[in-house]
Image (cartoon, rainbow, N blue to C red; front, side, top):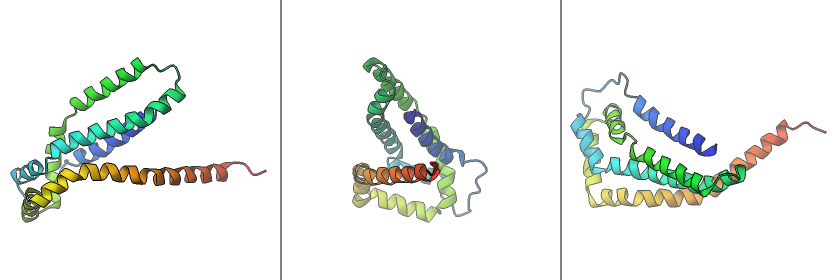
Length: 169
């Protein structure tokens, strides 16, 4: 099912971030865990991750309902509602705090203390807070704007691949 493959791709991307914690060498000028946690707090990282998951599931639900009904006409509204409840439960129990903790050494590896301090200062500023507040809407609008172009290109690539693979007469 397409929903399952999109979900698996999303979870794989998230797990790559979380899984990168193994034996991370942290530079001597790295920020402390507390510095990175402060940045995450200022950026409202937990809330943004939760919101991103909600939006992803809402988009997947909308895109996949028609396709699911087309491929499986026997699917009822009750089945779809049950699927929705399971995904809401999944989102509610997703270990966001553990993921954020796993991300700390990654930030420590890629940013110095002074860079984390500068990022914290920026995201604490009115401009930084506006950026954080507006980004979900900007990303949603961007996705809606570019998705038709991406879909066109994917369809064209699939058509070219089919033509290439089909036997010549």
